[in-house]
Amino acid sequence: AQSVSQHNHHVILSEAASLELGCNYSYGGTVNLFWYVQYPGQHLQLLLKYFSGDPLVKGIKGFEAEFIKSKFSFNLRKPSVQWSDTAEYFCAVNSLRGGSNYKLTFGKGTLLTVNP
Amino acid sequence: ETGVTQTPRHLVMGMTNKKSLKCEQHLGHNAMYWYKQSAKKPLELMFVYSLEERVENNSVPSRFSPECPNSSHLFLHLHTLQPEDSALYLCASSQDRLNYGYTFGSGTRLTVV
Figure 1: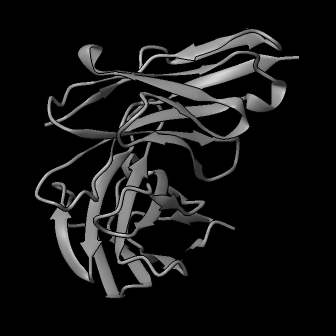
Figure 2: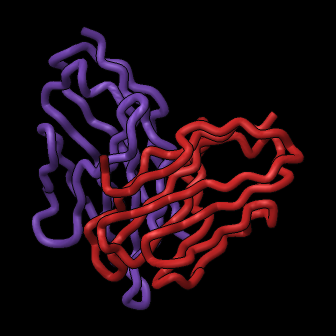
Figure 3: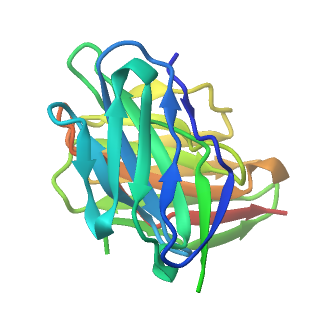
């Protein structure tokens, strides 16, 4: 069974600091990778996704993530965080099996607190 | 609004009660899911429905009973729950076989007393 590890449970930064959230997965086959964000009191929203091609993917709100296949990693980055980025961030992996790919496995999430 | 609507937003129920959670999607998706979100734990996939057929049940206790009458509606029937079942229950939908990700509802915050 595939699993997803997010290394940091809680990250606290000041505004304008750079952000990198780690994500590693265990599945060795072809995968699709996602980052979701959940702002306080709101629903999970898709931040960005990787299917194939350029391993550096750009998402909304200035976020990007890099897929490094050899490291089974998909780390999320942002050069300069804002107070409004305070949220919980979830990495998710969808392994391709049998042509039907409707099961996402999520990490435990990383709570990001940005202090003004 | 995400296109996936969950009701109620909050629910408090006793251990002997019977209640139902409702999810409705207006996105034309053909797969729907129930997830459980507890503090400090990964989102747990509970049930998957594809084309109204239950295709996955992740060892969920029988006190949780899903129902998918059509591709736009999904229910989670609850009875004789335990306090440890208190959590945020999330519904999601997707277009099967496509990799556009899931669309989540806002969830139902369930408290079992």
